[in-house]
Image (cartoon, rainbow over all chains, first blue to last red):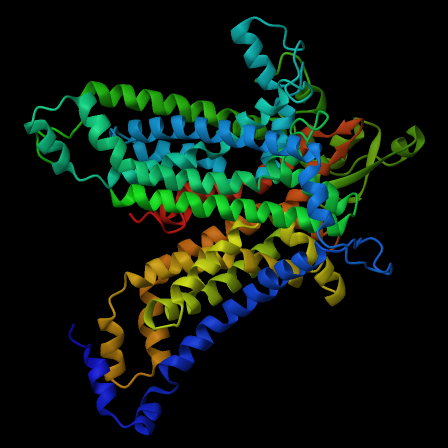
Amino acid sequence: MTQAPITRAAEATPLPVARKIRGLSDRAIAWIFVGPTIFLLLAINIFPLIWTINLSFTNFRANRPNREVEYVGLRNYERILTDTDIWLNMQATAHFLFWTILLQVLIGFTLAYLINKKFKGNDLWTTIIVLPMMLSPAVVGNFWKFLYQPQIGLFNYIVAFFTGKDPSSFEMLGQVNLAPWSIVIVDTWMWTPFVMLICLAGLRSIPDYIYEAAEIDRASKWRQFWTITVPMVMPFLMLAVLFRGIENFKMFDLVVQLTGGGPGSTTELTSINLKREAFEKWRTGYASAYAIILFVTVFGLASIYVKALNKVKER
Amino acid sequence: MSSFSVTEPNARSKWVAGSLVILYALITMVPLAWIMLTGFKSPADAISYPPKVIFDPTLEGYVNLFTTRTRQTDDFLAANPPETWYEEIVRQYDMVIAGPSKFGERFLNSVIIGFGSTFLSVFLGTLAAYAFSRFKIPLADDLLFFILSTRMMPPIAVAIPIFLMYRQLGLSDTHLGMILLYTAVNISLAVWLLKSFIDGIPTEYEEAALIDGYTRFQAFYKVVLPQAATGIASTAIFCLIFAWNEYAFAVLLTSGTAQTAPPFIPTIIGVGGLDWPAVAAGATIFLLPVMIFTVALRKHLLRGITFGAVRK
């Protein structure tokens, strides 16, 4: 590779002169530029993480800071992993993750496919579809609570209108069998556009000549869809699933406003459960261990997934 | 475009696709439209059955949102006739306006913290992104992955030690504390996005500037910054929207002076439960700026939404 002129010029200049010409050295500038960011992340992300790890081996309670702190070894971890209630929360989270991702992928891909037909005014309608995901999940989630009210809520009224049921005969947020679906519906409403946008970018990245070649080979539209469109969009789709997976594993604001984890603990996702342990029961040590377990789970699953993603990309 | 192309969809499939997409868009708008409508309803209209689409619009929700009210005796009401239109609205319920509510303050907090953290994350993010893009930094890929991975932590997990740390440093419930926290969360997005923008600017411009006797620093802010302006602006919008919408940290770490609007709006209580028109009015005021932003700046948004992974 040929060197850039500046590099050649720099090499020919004696070092003290170069300093004078360029002010600070590149290396110094690099560290001055990157330093503050790394410092901030260390102070507000990594230091707290290490602190959490440390706390997770103790019986510390944040509401009683003067009590003597004892190291309890792995007892917090043991208690969490053997607690059947926590497995129920994990199941609720898994249900939520599975259905939201499935619905968002199906609807999101379909919409992207339709938008890619390039009908007139498609970019304006795309923007309108994108609106829900730009809004505050807590504020919107809170308002959905109103839409879900039996009797007065719009959602119940519309369902009743189409099915002929009595609108006060079911309570989306109050019934054990319906509440898990109520959060799936709102999350799908809010985040389908995200999957759609990524799929759209994938569809637009497919060069036209591939379809033209397929057309010359007399491949049917159906065959073109399965052998060109789907495989080419797959890496993008998997990326969308990764982002949605991580985000929904952390899900807090939307669901806490909608159901608060209820009724009972049917919609108590792990994040909500964690908040209860940490900021309502004040079992700080225990909650820290819980947080570490969750973080390791997300990180582990995401790493495995990224490996799979790279394999798909290579093909 | 050529008049005949095998990849150009035919008119009928365009029409079908268009109608389906528009149908979806309309359905998806119903909840948002309902928020805005409810803001102009009276409490009685808001909870009527069947839900009312046509009603007498009133500004009651907005008045209730911005004021606190107290009930008064008939004598007092008779002796002090209402002077303003908003006083008049409140009088229907034998009440008088006692003072402003906390909504204005909370909204202002959202503005201060949102813009403060956006400025800081874009400022730091631009510097870091430039360094990652142009200089050889040892372990650059690992550092970049580290920066991204900080986003995988559930906010509650980070909130526990930050809660303790802020309590020690006196940063809990302060604007500065929240600005630093949101900056730390946003900076990963800012660095990744800005790096992808700066990578797209050819290095030749800077090299020419350096040969002309500019220092690295001058080359950075006189040559690179103006070229990265669009990228910086769209990154800023994303940071702003995130900070604007954030709820988990806000609800756990603030309670008074630095509380933002998202934890506040759901707690607006009226007579006998939540005051839905006031909640809707608050939500409308809070959501509308983002909606306008989104529509106005739609061309620049795609790259940010997808973390820089998707380039147009």
